[in-house]
Amino acid sequence: MTLDPRYSGAEAKGPEQTSLPTQRGIAWARIRTWEPLRDEVLNLAPLARLGYPRVARMADARIKPHRERLYAGATSRGAMPFERLPWDPNTYYTDVHMFGEREFGSVYLIDDERVALVETGTSNDADAILAAVHDFGYNPEDVDALVVSHIHLDHAGGAGFLLDAMRNATVYVHERGHKHLVDPSRLLASATDALQDMAESFGTMRPIRPDRLVAVRDGDTLDLGGRVLTFHHTPGHAPHELIVTDAKNRCIYTGDEAGLWFPRDNLLMPVTPAPSFDLTNNLASFETMLAFEPRALLFSHFGPHTEPRAAIETQRERYELWSAFVRERYKAKDEEAMVEELFGRYGKGATFYSREFLHRRIRNSVHGLVVYHRRLEHAAPGR
Ligand SMILES: [Zn+2]
Image 1 (cartoon, helix red, strand yellow):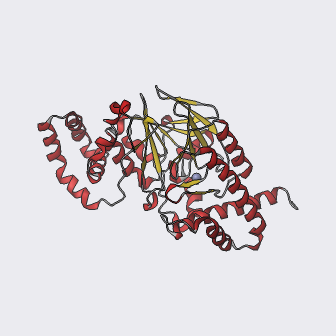
Image 2: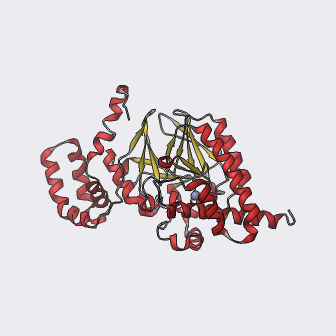
Image 3: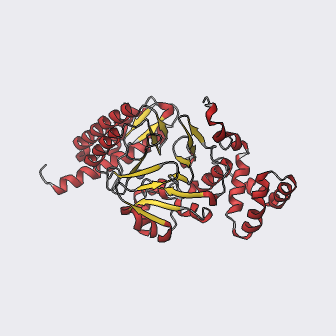
């Protein structure tokens, strides 16, 4: 990526500082959230970061035994450094290695007067996110806002865990998801039920105190100082789905409303999960996205897409095709055959992701479309 010299100020906080070993980043993040050590480490760390060598050595010696112990248990799921969007010196994204996969789960960081993260991954990703924020040059306390596109576990599961360390942060969620973040028990029960053998990789949730949550509605905004984010209620993928637009960089955080984007394989796929996917609403969301005339779409799965109009048009067509395909076939009660056929048509050329991984993604959408068509049939018998 070529760097614009005008952005050299921002650059100092970006990739340069992310060269610390990732394992060390994880250890620091863990120690910061570790109650018995919290005070002494926090007192020393800011001085160390300002470059006082003796204090830095003291801090280092103090945490060394713990760090070494933690290294031993650390896995390869460490965060990637936050990478800057080429056209915006203050917006970054990282790969949290969601489900142990590369380039499936992204979290965005907006480095404005107030610091915001968009998406929080699963609860399993919280350590990786803390490490990435640390390597970026911030303490967890420096993060002001956590925006979740919707409350599915791979988007909002990390929030309750991050809040422990991010003591000044507030979570922004659509009002229809609010109560489930305060009391996630019903959501967790239905997710465990729906996910079955995948439940473990989707992690869990921790209740969030209402005073640390903001319930947003369509048209609400979040002022970060140098830019304003606008929330749009787009209940296609789920009833509590939001897309978020940034008028300054003209990007859209699409959550799951624009489907999945696998950049390495140049592959776009619908994501239409049970129990509440709604095709009509999702198609309307594509119109909302087009009307914004975005420069790029910022996918949660995965990363920026810089040809937004083409991407949206492709997805609009694919959502209709997949839905029509499942409507024709679902009464035969052979979801696996539908998965196989869709994989043959869309996923077969992929080389970066495994066949099994793509199969799981398609299976999730096929099942969601089956549930959707059953629901429609139930509402209007004889359709
Ligand atoms: Zn989702």
